[in-house]
Length: 250
Image (cartoon, rainbow, N blue to C red):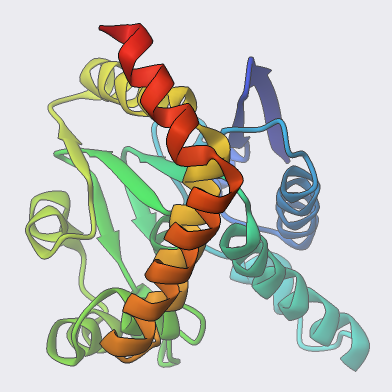
């Protein structure tokens, strides 16, 4: 199941299947997709965090629960659609998402962490696209890695099926903050999330949208987009409001 706690403008989600290392069965997958889609409709939210119960982020999808071999075809299609809905919802959120990782984030758990905007992890956390160990590709993780990394490192992570230390992912730029232990993770997460939650939500949303669009644009087109955004900000009086806010804070 997916637990939810809202504190002010921050929605905290927890994958709560500790007995199965927070692996995703069909119900949990559908619940997380629904919760994230609902979060996307709540314009008052400033941040969404995701973590796992019991000291583990997630072991991915629970293959024993989902691959019986005799399901109706439509049920199979719907289940995999739910899995992709999670990442579509994360991408479409108007506010940032933060994965808080301790223990293992492997297979689909690795995909989920990489699908969030930011990752904060303990130094002893382990990550990995372990699908290859079972002889099949990390089908959803691969396109996410392709957007985050260059082809040499991204393809290595997708193909090798190895456990990767948090430190190495930090050095690759896939983790934003490393924490020494669980207590330090709580402190780092609180500071990071509080900072995000205190930013102007409209400015955050526009920055995320501009960043995502610019990833797929030639630099000239991306700069034109930035120019047009500045023109709209100026015409709306947003620059003037920012100057007043700065002066009043001195």
